[in-house]
Length: 248
Length: 351
Image 1 (cartoon, rainbow over the protein chains, first blue to last red):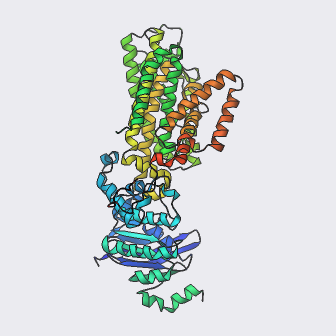
Image 2: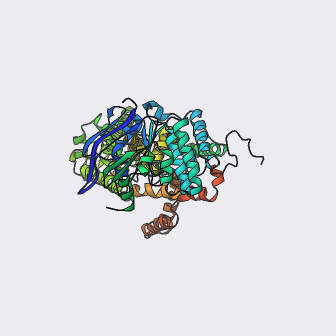
Image 3: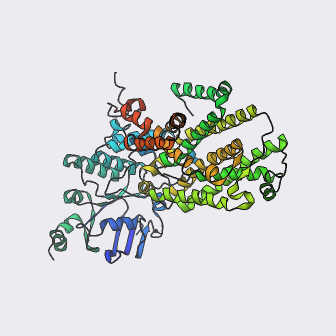
């Protein structure tokens, strides 16, 4: 099982009396695109937060490349090579796009002395190259907070690529994006996986998007794992259909 | 470190004024020294408040701490400090020029070193707080420090300490203090200009814009925050040590930990000049001193009312400060432009 990158075993998390995740187990294989779906409030974002160390979990185990990470904190996990983007897009709004990109470079092997040096020219070149990749090259000197929401989302994605993570957890990458831009974004997500070799784990509500992209899909409902399988299996799973249509 | 042509001219004229100003306007030497101190205040406050987005109301703590550390070091090198303060005025104190200057230099070094220690300790305690809670928490530290010193009889308590008298002519004395205050301001500016251009500068900007995001991207936020506070603590502590000697007499509430005057002035100067910019705080400090001196001269009796009204107007109508306003008005001057090229490989546009 050396090709399993993230292994979540029996993870539970409750907020007071509300059980957000109840003994959820899943695994993400290296080099794949894995989807996570489920109705609103089914615990998807909670699970993401648990994985990246945003809050402690109540029970269970989370392993990344075989290493137990459920006790580690956010920056430490990020430096191991696991990164997440946010449902509410988060960028550094008062800085220009190139600065946003340059500070997103991986901090995995940054030594103390290097904190006080300038970024080498290669970093700027890489930043500009990736901005071109997401179609923001022309706007690279603009203050990122002034960009449109969709452009900010693209910038956040480019920032994640700049970090060269092994795994990227994307929380609703297409939410709030103009439908004509979605195709471009799907294309770029796919290329991130193939060209950059990044394993993707995606929360997505847009079924067309996720069914086209993911090889393996997990479905959560009421905090529990409801189903797992290929897009075809999920689409034909009666439990999943019921959960989405609200039948009980 | 690279300077643009305009910056070079500006820096040279400031340098010229800093050295020759006190000689040309001998009556204003004290004001000029205070100006440089305000410049240090504004620059160091901006490191946290402007560049890192942590609005501290307690930075004055480092100023007062530096002042006391310097004074106590200077005196205890040659006298018993408890004896010195309890017999103030009754015993004749003598400091040879060598004793004075060596004590002063060592005092400043001690102030700088210990302020680093304080910044690390309080940083550890305070940086769990965010937003207004951080502001109030730091204010608490400054207020508590004033009260604590006031209750510490051995170093003068509320009665304060008289510093060793300067061994020389009064004119030389005021020039001496003006010039070392200027030197500290110049070193602080150069250091910050260099620092803001490094990765460290970008990282604290990232913390300002979205700290959770910075954490999620793997930036060691706590380390950066503590180092940034240390950066602003050291020049403040040194300025405190110098100011104490310049005044000649220090006490805890009005001189060393004046939270409602210097402590607030720091914030106002930065807001006036423009947060998070290199030149904004300096511009703010100069303008603020002008406004303050004009109101103190022509509106005496109402000076605090006038200053209060000025602050209200500033905060309500002019939040982004002078530099921020200029950046909004002329973004292209600050390099905020759309590049017509689609890619780095394309040729430069014809215009």
